[in-house]
Image (cartoon, rainbow, N blue to C red; front, top):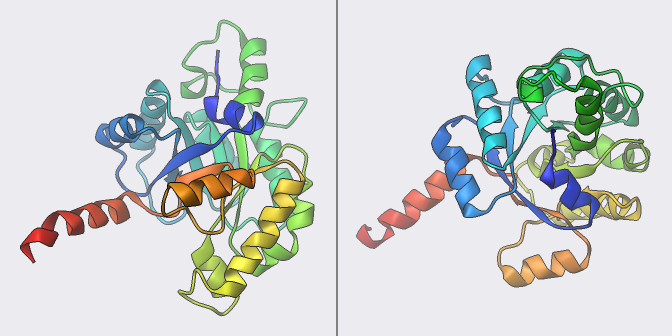
Length: 257
């Protein structure tokens, strides 16, 4: 039966750590992320074009290695959401979530009736098992994560309505785009940008939703302070695998400079 340990952990108030992937849909990425202790992999489809077969293979591989695969989509269209979920995603992250109506659409296409209007398929999403359709649909509704990515001033202004949508599980941020919509291009940690994210965090926490911190922890003390605030989503969710590779490569060559 389909399960999602990340959604279960979030519902219990526990913390989860994510690994963001842009281009490298390779077995090595899944194995390394799992060995490092990450809980989920978030695959970007906003800024990168993927081969459909490769993406499906990657999502199934992540699931088989106890990593919940989430996919970032650019709009809450049925075509996008249904295909990503049927390919094996256990969660959808909506980029540029600006309105409650967008999030309502995301919930609608992410859940089977009676909670939504997701179309039924029994492929990678069901581990190719059609022996218990009713049981699968119920389990899938319990497993799929619905997350709104706030990355605009409009999304911040509408946050109370967004977090009030029935079926939303959490909030993450796109600080770069948020800063740009505030005419603060490149200033991800500007006080006004941080204040906007804190407004979102307060609204999410008030509703009991999982949310990221405004600034990711730089050490254990930072992490523990954010956990005391009931922040739950952490990790390299705002950095790509090539950002991490560049950081490691720079560190590796440092003795020779």
